[in-house]
Length: 306
Image 1 (tube, rainbow, N blue to C red):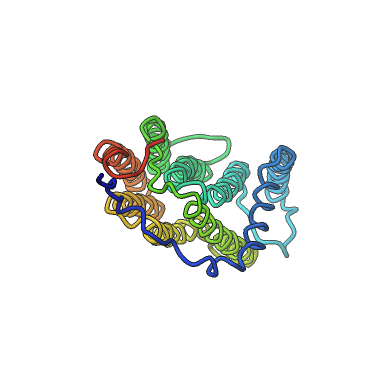
Image 2: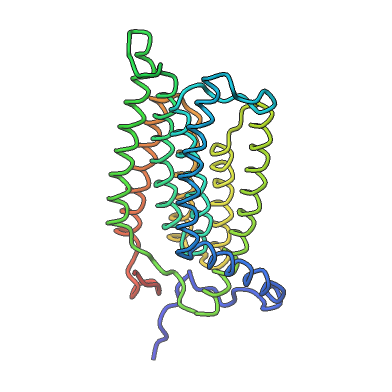
């Protein structure tokens, strides 16, 4: 009787239990944070807070326009479109938090969330360009640059949204592990990474808030996506520890390229930014389709599709 061939994604040992002995409190803290974040009360509270921040921003802009804005506070734009930009910025920050909490679930879900954030960033860029127009809105030949940038950001956001829809339709979770013990250790390692990203998120947010208070330029989302590149590489290395087979390595490393393209899109001018964002989305869709289609079935390699 011949034994079934062993998958190269199933190493005989995933590590000593001693390596995870002292992480139970860390994991419990993550689970507590995640439970708090997912509570309906938290979602309602955040929604109400966003409304009040939006109204407060409108009031602050009006005070600025009337010359009543305190001189000891950082200057703000004298256009009410700034309140829209601020609201979208806060929504994006919340979406980044959701992305960090999604990381322990799967890398494919994380990439889908990054595409969601990318669509919102492009819309935010459109509103940022809108704030450069006079109020009430009027357009002349001098404003054509802003109009083209708004169009590019809007169309780019739409195409990325459509690509995201295709991605979710074709994306299938491929489980390269079947041993519950190894799966638990793999998820535990990703939760520790997620907590590290939460700490970095808080540090970057505090730093950028101080920079804004001092009237200096802050690049919060550009920094966050740079951190995400390294986080995705760390995810790929963690996956390599538990799933050292070619198909898993190629898939996970390919997703890192998608994150890199999204990061480049954030640093480019509006039209080029939209083109890079659409390319990143199409690349991710093609990668998901290719790995789904060409990865061998479970009866050939010892893993399963979901």
